[in-house]
Length: 348
Image (cartoon, rainbow, N blue to C red; front, side, top):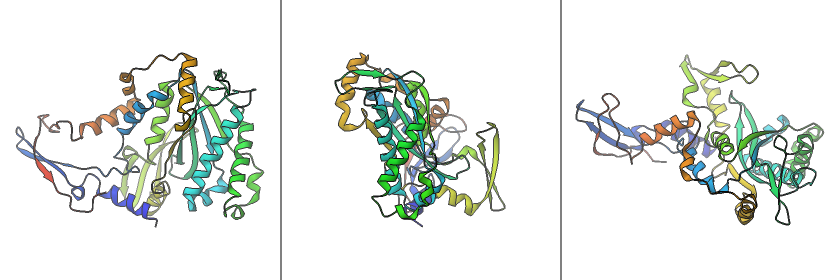
């Protein structure tokens, strides 16, 4: 097993247990002691990181433009998934590079946008049943900045033709893969089939980034989807795409762990990346675009408007933070801090 997989398993097992230490509180009303243990802070843990969605949205305020946004999804074909699973870091990097270059190139065509887009992308590797399915989600500005500094808007419901985008994406991925020693390991028929690319409008400004935030901070499975563990079988729920009905999936414990660990990313891998006007080296062009669009500065107070699910998750994490005064879960009385609890195992 990879060290990153072993570390993720250890962190999730030890998270919010005595192994990582914490604080000991006392309730004057109930006369009982309350233990509050530290979280593991592993980015693959279902319990940790919910509050990051709020923080990330707050950081995106300087990137917002008053234009329609699109969600563009690039999917890696099934023939490439085994190769990607065994060579995650190079294939994932290549996937980002090919997809972003293809979209920027096609959008630069004056028949469509005719300018440089702003893009933020995130890697997703799972389906609702935890199968391995690498794909990228990009939030893209509905327009771009031309070479002479003018802003050109796309149609409200159309960005670029996805069939043409699919062909460019496939060609760029193939050309980049040829530079590695992995190209000959593939069945060459994959370059003759159509690759799946999807595009849809998702609203304007902050609404578009709210749409993307759950994709960034979501893990393969959340705790509320775990139904039961019985007779060495894990049963979890998922929503079927075709019927939108909630179904149950039953897996052996070993198969469940195997599926989960497929989605643990390589150490220090960056899963959120910015391109075009949103890339760090082109932020001066973003300011130029904002001036062209006569953007009124956004208030930071708007950043807390998340989806109901993220609001509830963030509230739970904030309630358990060290900066807030915790309350007794039974009577609601403010708890008194008695002191820290030392960790009993190696901390993350």
